[in-house]
Length: 130
Image 1: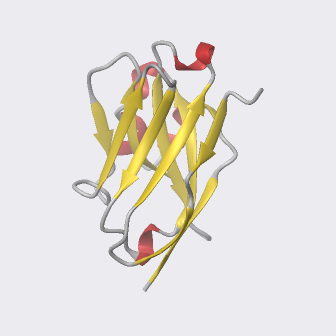
Image 2: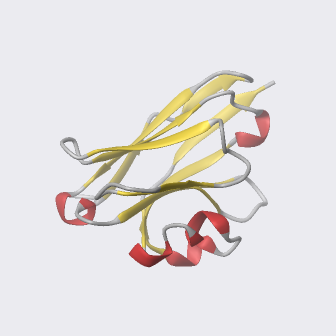
């Protein structure tokens, strides 16, 4: 059983919306920081949003603030990323990740945030057409 399984990727036009979901194993979900990263061809992997599964704060990368929303569902053990007002530059493979607890903000604020990831999901493709 994979600890992180993403779903919900696809193709939409500019201005559209998509919801990604990450199903998380029980052991991984408990008191952790979960995040979404993305990687476009030829670019570094960047942190998009992160959240504490125990409640409290969530954090966003500058490029998605006001458009994306990260939420958690304790009963389902899922972390979702709702993406609104999508742009062609949002096209990327999106990865769910477990982040070191103390690095939840740093994971999306730093260009090196991916170094705080403990393990990754397999990724799901998001394509935005103009």
